[in-house]
Figure 1 (spheres, one colour):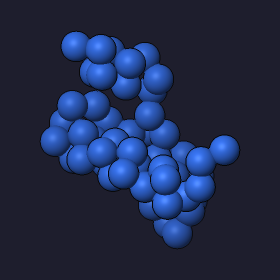
Figure 2 (tube, one colour):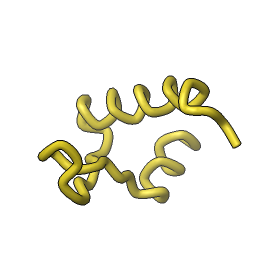
Figure 3 (cartoon, one colour):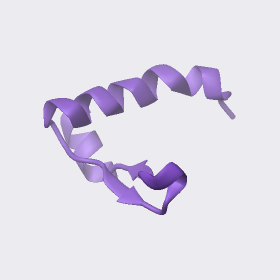
Figure 4 (tube, helix red, strand yellow):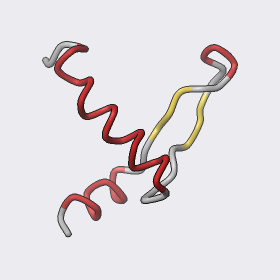
Length: 50
């Protein structure tokens, strides 16, 4: 299982794509008042297989 450090570049890429409008994160829960980001698998697959 990858460590948190190994996952970091992927998480930053997801956040950049979210910020640029390629797709939106779904916010779930109340983690520090902003919620946790969740992304739709089908949107990610569609984006990376272009």
